Image (cartoon, rainbow, N blue to C red):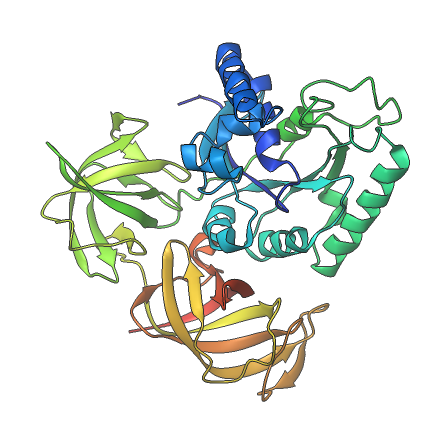
Length: 421
């Protein structure tokens, strides 16, 4: 691990706006991918008739992804800048991958929004910005990409910037904190070095903007919360749950509890980057082994915490939600799927308690009959099977969720209070 402070960086934006190419370029420019590997990808890309995809190839090194030319999984890639050690949470852009984006964005401290200069704000740009805002991403760097395609036009850059600013205002994202940078991920303009093609731009390069991100305060003083992403069986070790420490610290020897499966034991080993470590803190992706826990005792969506301060399991919870898109109206009794941290659980909206003015957050109506696209509301929710979730005021990392139905994200929200079972 690097001794620099760590940041998780989400790369978000509409499909085909150049996210993978940008990530490949960042890895290449920071020396995280050796030149000969890029050469190899370049040859392979040309053989497949996809010349020019080599940077994206760096990210999409799963064969299936190369064939399809799309990013599927959230690939964790790492690179260093002068100030930080970054893990990229590369968020897929295709619609059916939005749920990855949710578990992805909730893991990121800051984000780079990629908007293609020749296309401007597209439907997913809107959706991703909205999710980033709801899920608590603090700072946004906007890379106006593909400037090479629009002949490095300052007017086009200004138009796209204005369009994105309007979008940010709509979702109450502080535009004063956002930096807009004209880039070409493909050609490398303004990524690591100032571009000679855009003398009109006097702002930072993308890497400079990343260096200027505010340091995040790791939530080490909160109780340990580690949502489980997968459970493996590894010969010689046994059952190994894998996940990312959201808050607190896990030490070898700790007594932990998994909720809602309600099993526990003592942490025997913790492994990170294939090395055994004595402890893990917020942001660390770890695999660990717990004495007496079998593969069938726990599952993805469980949350690991201290045995004496276990994760909350909700009988019901109250939440603030914003409806992004729904073909009709949402009423009490509606049961979509809630995606919270790594869990996916069908939940019933038992009551709609208040409708809020989305611009001010003030209460607009008590106990409305329904809510629709564009509305913000406070609702009471009952999970259909046990769900571990926390109030966002206490543990924000486990207090946000997205609501999906009919193959799309219809709403996102944060937990106000939990009525434990």
